[in-house]
Length: 583
Image 1 (cartoon, one colour):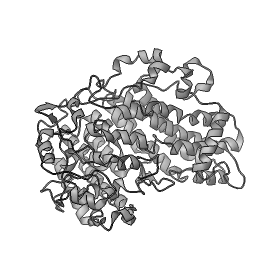
Image 2 (cartoon, rainbow, N blue to C red):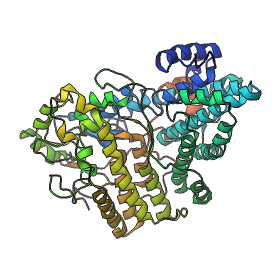
Image 3 (cartoon, one colour):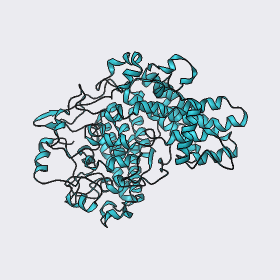
């Protein structure tokens, strides 16, 4: 049965053997933990949190997200090629019927759907191990099961956000013998969300209790095996609760009666007080190492120009960077052009093509900084901050993301946060500026000999605390002056796009589809103006072969335009600017 490779756990010996070899090579030999102690559970947990396509973004996945300019990153307008008529495949940009416009290949054909199940086969194995133990052995292993359940829930919610209905309630548990486990049905996405929300609430309450019941030796082993938070269970608790809050805000748009009391409850429990991220166990050499998204970005530098929906919210005055007028994040997120200013790419190809043809070209790679600085007529993402940053951390959650959630909660009356929405917006801006200057300052690109002494423009001096606070007040004032909730959401989501940018494309696409913000630029090609809006990705073709009966029950929605369940009925239908004049 081919279904085995998608939803079932492999037999224990196979799991242990392959995991053992992989972990020995990559994770500090966790099968020889300390003083001769051996236990498969910690190693399996390490595997689940470090595998690609969950927390750690994937090289191949990212390569294709960027490459053509017509996948998620292009359609949500966070990164794009310098489009002109020379790219003839953009002629079908508005085709959401056959799929010749929007390219969901990076998800459907790069194994995202299938690997989310196979890579989480450790959940069932750890669950069975815990169930078969007793006494202190069981207590020492139980926290790993709770943590891997958190990983499973986190990834399953992302699958819902991409596909809507997915196999969930009968997935991940193939060895129980029930036929449904081999061919699991596609479940109601709203019920999946509610189940995950319940899980996350239970985990928020029980993780610390489970940790406190571990033996001292087991706590030491957890600190070694936990590549994310080094055994700091309080951060895992904060992450679980923050993820729960995010899902509750999404479901509130379609079931406020269910979500509101749970949002209020969630606000009483631990939420992140610091940015939650972790470093890879190796420096990410973008030019050779696989398995991390920075290489996918490095090899597709020509598709990493900053679109105007971000640039126009960073650069408000002239094209030059003007402190006090422009966002302080502009020089730390963007590369200067050959004109020593900052210019985004537009989706008005009719106006952009003659500019390109007149000589405003670019150097397409990230291997020669002087060539980029002297040739590029449009701004790419900052090489030091992104493309060549071997110290880029793996993102989990940030204070800015929390601030923006709290602002939306307060503004929409979903709960009482204890602070005005506009003050949450100011907090978000301040935290984001600090976040990105820290990322830039930690970059090792300045030590790269390829920089040839030209890296200085990519390391702007961090503004003073007063200047950062003043910019927070600027955005706060814009938010307060916005006339309606919809207008305020535009400003809020503009800030989310600036903050998460290239780092979290799926999160931004989810929020774009849920809220209809920030508004996008129309696409103009040879006089034809279009406003395509893909709502989801399609199931991989392997599902038709491996699980056809259950797939047929959701086939009516297996297209690019059926909405995910959390899209509110009253979402503003005007998802684009009417023209190219930003309000």
